[in-house]
Image (cartoon, rainbow, N blue to C red):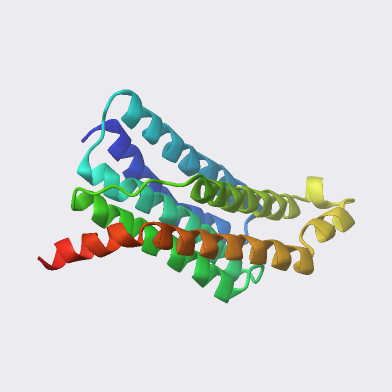
Length: 199
């Protein structure tokens, strides 16, 4: 198995590790969870770079690489729902959109078709990841007495429920709209794809 695919497997393995550490009441585990998330996210960039540079592109990688990315980000969003920071319905919308589009693209690759990734979708991903990093860093800092003590008001402001809700709402709307736009822009190709699938 080529190295990019090994990194994809590593990212999938690190996801439940991240969730376990994140949900722990141990502040040290929470700090490690942040490090694990960063490492897992970096493997997504690195395996993509390796695949393009050395032409390590396989059908297995085309399917599992984007799926592993969505598994990681979806788990992070769901983790923040579990600790009552994010509303469930927004998390569900984001997860559903990302998995539907990812599986659709994977099926298209399997059928020998290609769905181009729009700049809008890339900005959506950037926005999601930026928001997740923001929440992870603030949440981790809140669990560190040496940082939190004396800065309680700052942390309270940074994790203000109204601010978090509005920001998550914006992320959710953009995520949903990008998915809808993606389907509408490729509706002809999608129809052909599933005609092929029934043939």
